[in-house]
Image (cartoon, rainbow, N blue to C red; front, side, top):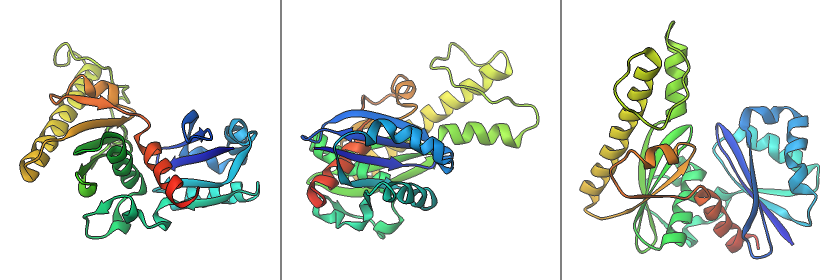
Length: 252
C-alpha cells in the first residue's frame, strides 16, 4: 500500500508518494497557477496515481481555490481528499495562538514536523511566497511566529513597480557592493534578507529567553544558510513530515 500527501502553496504544490512505512519515496512539485489546465494536472499526477495508493489523500493548503480544483480532479479518480485543519491538531501539538484558523496549514505542518523530528525548541524558517518563522518549544507547543515578505515576491514586486530595474536571479555570493544594477540589487536582497533573518532570530531569542535549533526549508535555504550567523540545518521535507504525522494519527 502506498500513500499520497501534499502541500498546496501560493507558488508551488508539492506532492509526495509514501511507502507502507510512510517514508517518502518520490516527490515532485508543480506551479500552483498551472493546475487550472487539466492537462497539466493529469501529466503531473501520472507518476503518482499508477501505484496501489490508499484512497485517502491529505493536503495542507493556503489556497482554497486551488484546493478545490485539486479536490475536484482527484474526486473524479475516486480519491477522498482531506485538509489538515479539519482534524484536531491539538492531539499532536499544543497551539499557543489566539486563533488557529488564522495560521496557515503549512506553518502548522512545519511546527509538527519540526517537533517530532528534533524533539526540542526550534524555529522553522520557510522561504516561500512569504518568509515565515515558526516557533516550537518543548514539551510540544506551537508558540506562534513571524511573517515577513518572501524573497521571490520582493524581487518580483520591485521589478513590477519600477520602470528600469530588471528581474534578477539571486546569486549565492557577494564579493562586494554592486558595480552595476544587477550586482547592486543582488547585494541588496542578500544583505537585506541576511539582516532581516538574523534580527528576527535575535528578537525571538530575546523575547522568549530560550535557545533554539534553526531549521531552514524552502527554495532559498541553501543561499541563506551560508549567510546568516546562526548555526542552521536544512530540511526540505519538514512540511511533508508534519503532514505525514497528521495522516498517521487521523487517517491510517
